[in-house]
Length: 405
Image (tube, rainbow, N blue to C red; front, side, top):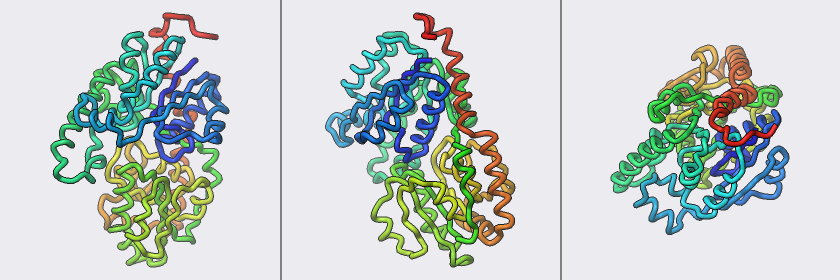
C-alpha cells in the first residue's frame, strides 16, 4: 500500500512512548513492503543524522517547522478559536496546509493522522477531496484534564473548563469524520466509540521483544528505576509522588535501595529539590539494555494518563519485576500478584517495592511472567498486523483510482 502518515513530532529519536510507537510501526510496515511518506510538523529541527535513520525505510520524509509556542497567533487562537488549546498550538499553519493540498493530488491507499489535536490543518482538504482517513488516538485527550491543567493557577479555572469543553467538542468533530478510528487499548476503544459513533479498532502498543530479551535484571543492585518523558505531565506527577512519598517509605525498610530517574526533558531544578544521594539522575538513556540489566525493579507510580504505557511494556519485556498503580498497567491483561505487584497508595506501592527487593527469588519469576506476556500479546509484529487489518477495511473506500501493484 501507499501510505501518507502524518505526525506532529518526529518519531526519532524515540524519547517518548508515543514516538517509540510511531517509529516501530512505521519501520514494521515498511519491512512488510508498504511505501510510506511521512509528513512531520515538528517544534524541533530534525538533524541530518535523525533524517538518515528515518529515510532508511521511508519512501519520502517531509518536515515542516512548527511556529514558537508563544507566538501571537497561538495566543489569540488559544483564547478565541473553536479549537482546544492543543489543536491551536499544533495547527493554523498555512505552509502545512499547502503541502498537504499538494500531496492529496496523488493517490494514497491510506492517509493516517495521529492525534486529534494535530487534525486542524488537514480538515478542509480532506473534506473537499472526500479523502477517507484513519485517525489514531493514543489517549482520550478530553479526559486528561487532571494532568494537563493541574499546574495552572486557580484563577485560570474558567479557561480550563472552557478548554475542556472545547476539546470534548473537537474530539466529536474529528472522530465523526474519520473512516476508521484506532485506539491503543480496549478500554479507550469503548470510550472513543461513543464519541465517534462507530466501532473503534485497537492497535496495541508493542515492544521489540527480540531486542529486550538481551536484558537481565540484577537483584543485587537494589536499584529502582522509572523512565519517562518529562514534557508529559503524568510522568512529572509520577516522579514527584515517588520522591516525595513513596521512596522515603522504601528507605525506612530498605535503606540501601537506590532510585534511578531516567528520561527526556528532566528539569534541572529536581537535583536541588531532592538531594538524597541515593537518587541517581540519569536523564535520557540511549541504551536501555544496559540500564535495565543494572536495575532490580521498575516502579510505575502513574496516577494520570491513558492508553498503555510503552515504558512499562519495555520494562516487562526486559524481565524487570514491576510495582505499579492500576493506571500504570492500564490496557494490559496482567494479573496482580502473578505478573506484577500493585498499589494505589504511597504505603502500598512502597510495600510492593520492598517485597520485590527483599525477596528476589519470588521477584524473578514475576519478571519472567511479565516478559512472556509481552512477547505473546505486544510484540510490534502483532501491532503491525492489527493495523494492516484496519487498512484492509479502507479498500472499498479508495476505488477512485486503481492502487499500484
